[in-house]
Image (cartoon, rainbow, N blue to C red; front, side, top):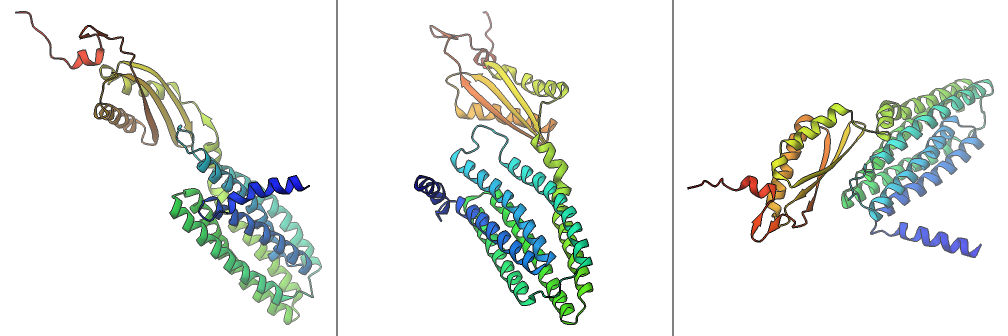
Length: 333
């Protein structure tokens, strides 16, 4: 038991360092867990479908927060220097998971709403519900601003995306607060059935609003998660761009392509003269990238260069195809 606690502390301690981007993601995760637990307990005890649904939505956000935390940790531990597909796939996975869970939650909420319509609650503590809703709003705004601050500080779009989710949730919370006020007034007037109907309608409306983004971007997210090989026609066009510059390289070794969503990833491996300057290499790379972008505007290409093995140099003469191509022709007298 003691060893397990020690291991957990060693894992959590680096995540709570204020000078690391993981701190903001960890705070977001902790807030999600606390808000989900408290909202579900209050919602179930007080039979408030609005607060209960809000808790379930926050419970789904825990999964998103875990994905975002994993993405931030990976970006700090293993930066994207090897031309991986990037960390947008974490966002895509979060969108797909949210969409599926929200659909299930919508079905569950509709069934719960039917039960509340049949037996409306008559003893809700409106002051407790309103106090918790107001506190949730301020916590959401604080968490969103914290994430936004760390996103700007460490230049991480993933944190900014998470901050935007918290901002949207805070606006939904304003609607929850207003609905609780109206529901409390109806309870005070003895209109329990009308209050129950309002509770159910607002809860379903919350889910409809929350599910808009996952449904809107779900198909794009699914395509983003599937890496596909480019068709032969597109591969030939890439080879044509390389062939246009064949006299400026010692050897064309390989090209690797992959399509993920609308993005086209292209890796080109070339062999260049060992004594070429960066200026020469940069100019060739710029020309190849320009040709690729003209054919594929959404392409994300990279050119990798390996120096030759000096085998083309013999006693002051050269058989290097690149150097011979740029040498002026010689004429016999």
